[in-house]
Image (cartoon, rainbow, N blue to C red):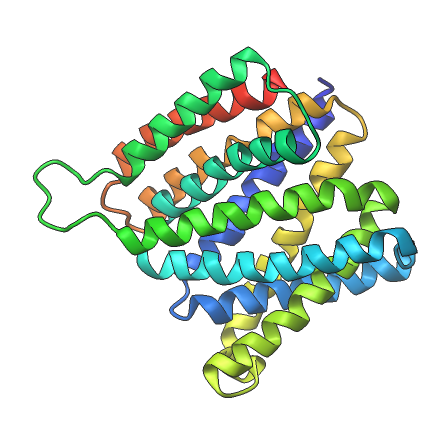
Length: 282
């Protein structure tokens, strides 16, 4: 793997975990998720100005993906309302590739190689350890956080399968630009309905800079991966991306005060190992 590709994908990993940490750390996570998406949409307009609109063959896919992405952000922010970053992020990112792999096998008739089952087993073990109650802890397991994390994983798997087909029909930059715009429009309507006012009125003036950074991280993470894919093998890039679950667990423990940080860091490492095996085997 070229050194520049390694730098690009690891930078993407850090950016992705970082914008999740920003959303989790806010008091109103739904509004934080909306602001992140809206900031990404502004940057998406810049992409469209440079690359143009996507082809007509990709419009149906990017529309479906935008709808699913809005559901993803809603489920993710709800999961963060009930659970720590070190719990939600590894489960959502860990379960999603398993569901996507099963979906690809069912929809696209992709065969599943033998080592993939070992990867799936490790992911399942890591997720079980993440969701298990701590020994001697009085508090019950965070069932709501687990449920919303699993729903988040389902949305990730769905938009992954949609994007796989849609991005092949147009330029990635055009696809991403329209995707963020559709996502932002749907989330604006949803947040306005839930909060009873325009979402931009709910963002404190002093937080816009941070949310703009979060949106840039969100969009930039995807673009860096695309740049890495252009100069290196897909398997290497996809496997390295999964190390984000370890980074998120570490950030949650060291910077957001997650109480079970060390145990979840180890569990996330097991999930990451399973993801690498699953991706590499394909």
